[in-house]
Length: 143
Length: 143
Image 1 (cartoon, rainbow over the protein chains, first blue to last red):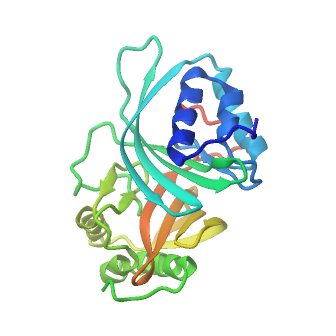
Image 2 (image 1 turned 90 degrees about the vertical axis):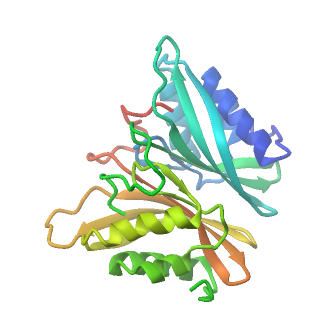
């Protein structure tokens, strides 16, 4: 599956969110680098390190039967020759549920390697129910 | 303040956590790039974009009077010529409190520019109270 090539971080990111929406584990893992040190942090979850742990977390999510739709907005990118960092807002809708949940924020990191651009880190976290003013820090903030 | 040079992402990261421990706003902002698109996500907070918003969030935290000690462990790094991504566990202790809080996980992104390595993104989030087995996904996980 790692043979699938992405010519840009954007291509890899599109494939990531499509795999998520389809609960397609094979397509999801094709997005990830085979680097042993890949990192995945699901919203408020522990840091998962290594392909086996990352793969197992997606397998459990996808077999949970919940179908998710994810729309991303407000992409901000930092790019170099071999490394690209994306920050996106994730608007998640759960199939069969009316209400849109508050957006998540995700940091997605892609590296360019033998098979093109692959994800090496995904860090997602919840944002407050009540949208904050930019200059209002969250009460739960500890730093 | 941006004139302060860091010769590596590691140097910038050490300065970041020292500024945090000292509640030193000037030292904290010296770590950040003057790029308009810097991003800061405090634990479970909204995404703050731009130096003014990022600075204000630290100002409010540092004037809150809570002194934090932060010890980082389990650094994982992805580096290229101009961009470095660190993933670290943050062990935060609040001055005057006995119990250590559960660790946070942070993704820190540094870019190399005219003034050496500067932070362009900090994304921190809480981890579960009960440490998870690596292959156990969090109930609150939505993806």
